[in-house]
Amino acid sequence: MDKRDSKIKEKLVSVKHSTEVKAFDEQTAVVKQRGRRWRLSYKWRALRS
Image 1 (cartoon, rainbow, N blue to C red):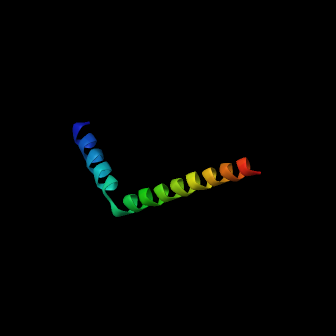
Image 2: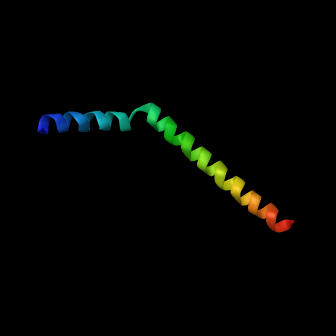
């Protein structure tokens, strides 16, 4: 089991550092930020009307 566990850990580490995962993380951060901005602007508009 130790050899198998170490192989799995190595694969997980390599996936975490891959450029695809980093790009996906950046994209999700942008989407979250846009969602927050939209939500704030929606609340602001609702308060003004």
